[in-house]
Image (tube, rainbow, N blue to C red):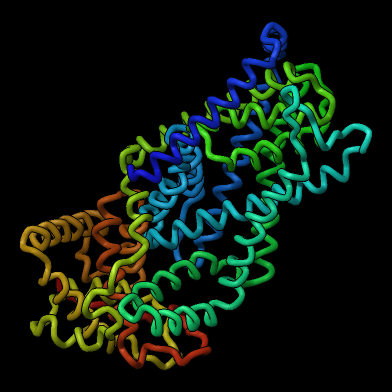
Length: 507
């Protein structure tokens, strides 16, 4: 880790240790132990666990929608992506779970890492805004004689609810402004970034503009008001289910099953754990949850015991689920550090030669030999669903130049990679013949297109890695053809409904 990261880890650990030391000094531990011994575990703790887990499934629905414009994720996969992020946050410091989540989302969806990271932080911003909204509603709903907005927790240590709200509002309001700007006026932001970098940092113009474009694509789902309402509604439901976890633990300690008290505990706790702390938010979680209960008249010892049980419900099932998901997808915690380093490299060193030049020049210069019949059939299947500017566009005419470019790029690979690619494609052709009793090139176009997408977006990781590079290269070359480029502001026309032409007949 870098020195700055080490400093943050040390600060987080010291924060947790300091809070736990305060608790050790000023709590009467015999009362804490008595509260824990008198806890009614069944049925309240299992119900709390179920409520928390259902909330993560809804998070998976939200994640799936946020990437739906550019990728297709199954609900179990999207939910596992979310859970892995939470689990890694519980195990590793510096909130590395956000990078693990973004890296896994990039691998599962085929989106660039920057765009996946943008989606991850967009979810965090939405969560923060919903939490603030619920906290403000709760402060209004709880009677003033019940809620003490300024509580003395440890002797003269006073915690003010207004300070928590003020701090969180400043953080999430600024972040929300950035999201709104990226979703509402993406063209203006790209133009501004292009003009500024052209004048101040011309060598960084192309990579920085590309970076801004990926960030804007990450919030693209929020450009329509109806979609925004759906995402906001899902976010509210997510946090109501998480509040359910706090609700169900209340009667386990003999406390009234008051939803407003539970929402107060949930919101205060989640806002306070923004402060750097140890993995799993040990200490910070417990003290902030206890503070919320003290504000409604619960003793510190019962509040701390309540926080211990809620933290176990928060920590154990999701960590176990996340570690299992990591294992099932063949990932390791070490890859999280790789993803975090990739995020650090987003400072984007100088542009490489050739960046920003059209591929139309490269199409005629990479390789002059003709593409194979298999490459023609594969390319035809890839571009079959690519949107085009006009209904009379001849998609068949684009197959040969695009296939030639893809073939040239493959021939330009190092010998080892080229041989591996060739062997892998022969295996795919063999599987195709066994599966359909006919060769890949002989398959009807629509069946061939679905077969390619099954490989590119299926559960087989090597298949995804094999086909997505070919697919991305073909789509990139396709839109470098001038006739395939739509004028600015013109909607694309999907030609899938037109009569499909037969593919090449040779295998």
